[in-house]
Length: 87
Image (cartoon, rainbow, N blue to C red; front, side, top):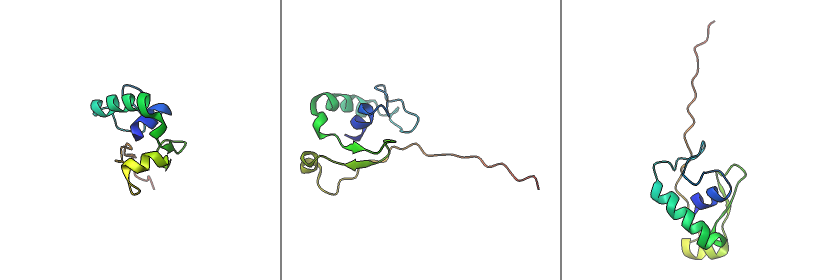
């Protein structure tokens, strides 16, 4: 459901491509998310502005998921490169 919400909010393209989230290797998840978005948009969570975290779930969704549901983390890891000091 989080993938569907990210597609809705344009954080993830309909082909699964995203600079922030890793869905490119999960074609089945993306296809199911698009179907879910069309058929059950009222169950999708409200996301933070960057799409990273779920702000809230509709009460109807929590009936199915349970109060303690935590979605799988699909944020792309940040890799930084530090150059050695020249001092």
